[in-house]
Structure formats: structure tokens, C-alpha cells
Length: 129
View 1: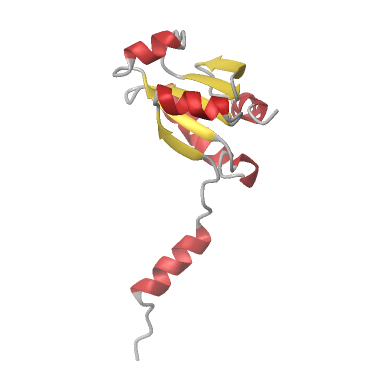
View 2: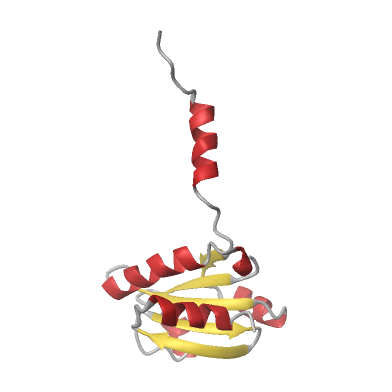
């Protein structure tokens, strides 16, 4: 006799085992950023490049941190350093691997090329104040 789980049961178990990400992650759009700022939302702008090893470490930390339900109203805007040059100039971004925290229109802080999980965590928490 063979015992097996159906695909639906496996899918349900997978959903239970992997927590949902609380923060909303979306491509950078200046108009949507302005709307979120006007609403007073917590915002993180993640300036990345696909080839950047520092960015990959930052993304690992960010995806772990933003699973916390405390960040359910956080919006993470991912700005591509290589293709969104005008947008990064407007934000005065010096290089890829830059993280910019906002609470509404108020900039709370920036990190450039940091991979320290605790430092990144403090920056993300600053969006909630």
C-alpha cells in the first residue's frame, strides 16, 4: 500500500511552513512614491543592481526583516541603479546598494553599501516613527 499526499495537501503545507512577507515590495515609480509619502506611509527605497554582491546580501536581510507583521504598512520601492538613472539622480543616490528610509515625506536615514543586519534593521525600523 502506498501513502502519498496529493498536490493540494503539499501546497497547503508549503503555505503554512513559509510565512508571508508583511511589507509590500514593488518596482520604483516616482508617482506612487509621492502618493505613499502624501499618505504618511513608511517607505524604504532600495537602490540595487543585479550584478551587485552587496545588494544581494542586503536583499537577504531585507526579505527576512520585512516578514515581521510590524512592517505590514511598509512599502519597499526597488530602484534599478542601471536603468533608472533619472530617478536615482533625483534622490541623490551615489551608488548601488543604497537604502533610503522615509516616514511619509520625512527622510529618516540612508545606508550606502552596508551589509550589517542590525544596522539595516535599525534603518527599516526608523520608517515606522
